[in-house]
Image 1: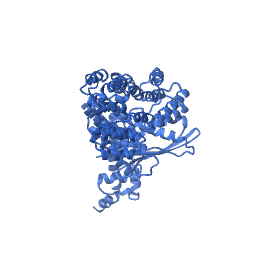
Image 2: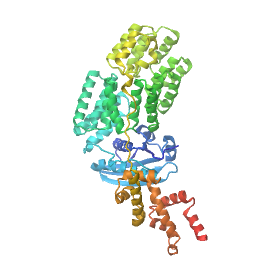
Image 3: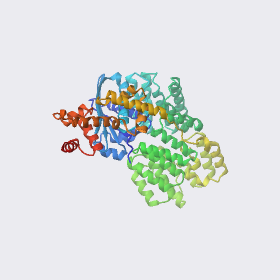
Image 4: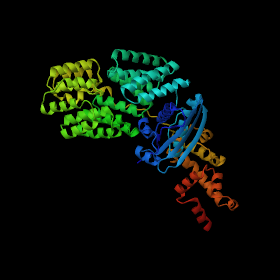
Length: 589
């Protein structure tokens, strides 16, 4: 069943003549996604899955079914010099009904306020139509007023999201341009730091030089003293993958998670951390949350498969990897893990078919490794050198695996110790790696595990942050009576543009608390509550002989309905027939 409070923000179309504005349009879309992700109780599809529909002309009803959401936000952006026009439409996926649409004409420097305005409007419209949400006073907050710095930052994020070493390197440079344009803008410092962290952790840059840059950018960002989910997440990533300081990494990630518990990346990272300490049930829970939020992300399927791989559930891991590879057939880390699982399982036919379909220039290595593992055939060590100089950049420790299965255990243990001392990501999960089973009983292996792996109690449960907006029983009754009195005496429902905040001001209650009151006490969303008054008013007017000269639509508009489609939609859902049929029946009586 589709959650009614769920939305996908499709990439806003670039209507500008300049193709360079594409990154601006994509960046604005991503920031609206990020802003809405901060609304507690709202399911927001993550960027990767939303952007799978970029330049795809597909019916929103089909997209809603594929992403399992009830709402789609789509729009366009036209940017010319210092002027910008944004159009946006909120569409119901069950029937393609347009709930809301608006056009915004602004000066470019106003883009920061506009992004927050759009995000707040969307959150309000969802709350008014579908039920209670806790909506903050501000959803989008960016710590720069420099448009050039912001544009470089958006372009850097786009490069970073390619998830390859070339992309990380290009993103780092673009983040540095953003910093140069506005040294007080905190977010690009953490983007640059994290980019260099990955470049150093996986050997694209010398680790000493890369981490020196990480420290520089993180220190400069921390000096700005701005707490954000991005900051805590970036620092946690470096502490985890780069430095293996797991306690500190968990504490930093917990802060990011508490700020954005519905963020797919935060949940995926929580999954990785729990897998490291063997808490596979909680790891699975977090990665399944990521997949629900971001169902078209190959990285999440990889992470879920890795959890199964570490539990030696290899066939199950292959099934999950195949789902991710179907989404992105070029996603190399999923290809590599699938090859790994196939070799260990010993299913030669499926191994060969998979390897042939991936069309890797390292096929000889994997065929030779298969023969070594299952037939104890000689292995040509030159093949290992080839894999590290090929276009295929290995994630797994193939050099270590070869030594283990050649039964050169002392050499394997020495190499493992060096990799651990160098904090290589390849061996972070060494305690559970199925390839290292022959070493499990070895005392030196147990010593290495004991000295490098975190204790299982560093993570005891998922961090949580509940933002409950409740009224006591007496408060709820007091404001319920006040609400009814105001609606009857002032007939607020006759105002077509009436919103939740308008009534909240009249009643003297915070909009979040009024939303909670309507949903939890009256068991209605805002539009059900207001439109019931409008419907009753319409029926009274329609039965008054003085109004027989007026059309049905005219009467509906006088009763406060703001459009024919909204009136007809609500009337049929509530009464069970069209307004015209109902009126005929009443007049015939």
